[in-house]
Image (cartoon, rainbow, N blue to C red):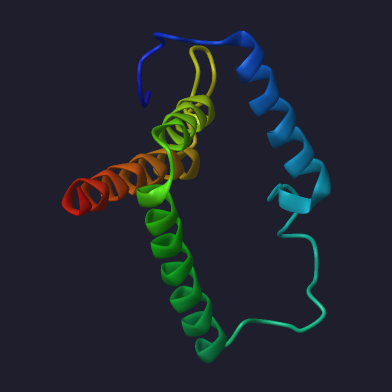
Length: 118
């Protein structure tokens, strides 16, 4: 599991839970994706490359924004990473674990840039 349980706030955990449920209800969940047909068809190599470039750009934008944000934003990202990590008794999911690691890596990259600017 990513992180420790010190400072666990049940109220904040409930807020995170509601946000994830809302995300899943609004189409963010991957459940049933295999069954749904897309209107445009398969993504080609050009579109796939474009999506990858845009994802890299977005990741770097998040790092830049975290580098300039108050420390409370980095704390919030760490809490969210801890929240999406598998909890005791739950089945670990590879993508969720990797997402939590990536979130923590972005916070660390932001801290590096923050330190070099001070």
